[in-house]
Length: 452
Image (cartoon, rainbow, N blue to C red; front, side):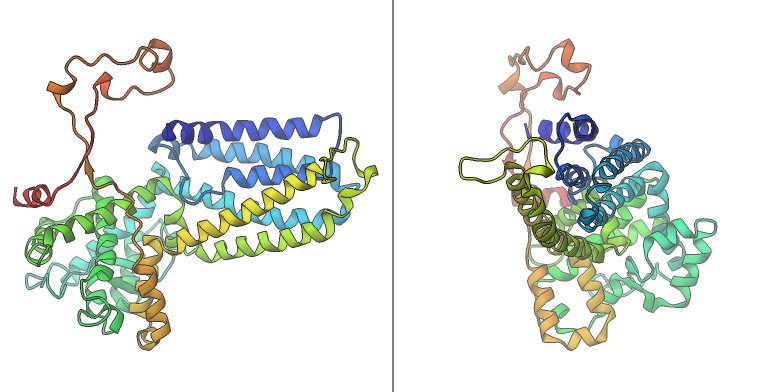
């Protein structure tokens, strides 16, 4: 049911917003809050950080999204023009919300472009270039140690932004990355550097006794390698052997090694899921997370300006043709605007909190901690990073879905769900088979996966 609701919201929101803008413009009565409401609807279109696409095919429709934005922006500006000619004092309010709108729609547009066929290769090629360049610098050292990660130069972070690297210098990406990676290793954070960090936060005898903090960076490095495989980039055979050597002789050899391996894979798949379906990759890889704070400040400032300058003026009867008032004397339009503003502020705070404790933020904090010597001696920073990295949201159910032929051999699917009208619009999953109740993945199964 939730999947259907998300699909409907993703598919219909753009059309409904365009239709609503037309109704506001052609309405027989006028309300000075119409432009503000229209801006709220546009912000809603690109407001979610954790939901940028419903399916992989949606990422390829970024041009349609761009055209849809152009149409709705024209409708919004037309509506603003009708009201700002008579109400110029409200220009500051609308400009503040326009900044929020521009930032949010740009984030979502960049997310769609970056994971489309056009941008996916450019967002991933730098990893392949790093592996190629690192091979020249003895990345595939036969003496690599999976315990200390000596010789494992799997990239976690580069100092230059991804957008500068992959979109600004596409003509000669390998040469550009070789200049960064080969000449200045301090600008590249690798797994080897993370394990070599002397800070107390990442010390095996200090704040990271179970290695969970360092494993977050390891999961991110594996996620980058998984992206290479997804896009059919080839790696040297030695690289595959070295990775298996790390898993077999490093991760699995320790106590509860199978649990650790599945935990690393779980976080790795979280990164991979977010890459296709959320705004997090573009926010953190392109270093746009600072703009989220700007969005919140603009929203708070816009709310204050709205209350001071806009709300009092909308209480005058001559400003509107139709005035709706509750039995308690509250203006309905003002009350709705106030409720929407409070909801937006709460949603933004929740999104900022979820972004701050996401695995993407943890990688950013840990890499900065490894790179900045001043942070490694600061108790406050170490405590802050420790609190953030200690939060685990468990995005996966850790359950095994199963199908038993003996239990569902006589299952007859519902005619309401499986008929010719539905299959023209919605994909039919499972061909009518009845799925058994999922079971939790046991430790024996996890162990058998690697023993096999």
